[in-house]
Length: 73
Image (tube, rainbow, N blue to C red; front, side, top):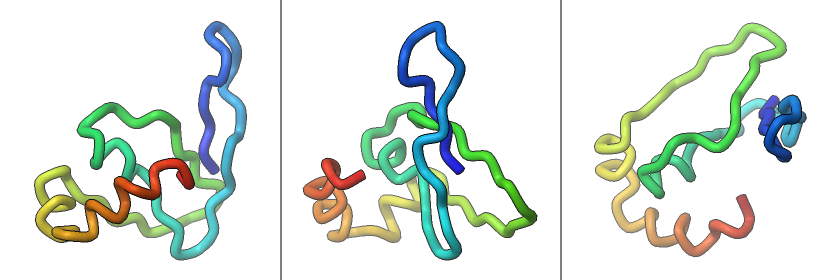
């Protein structure tokens, strides 16, 4: 699940539940900014990660597509 502080001074609230195959953190990589939410695993899982340089190299022209779809995230 993803949690996020929606109002300063309040506790973080659950904002999204992930399912198998979902991904997270792409906005931080695209914007070269800190992540906006925390991810908390409710069960055991396997997680892969990429640094920004690898993300940009692997995405290539798809980065523009993700940039256009910011509003959907």
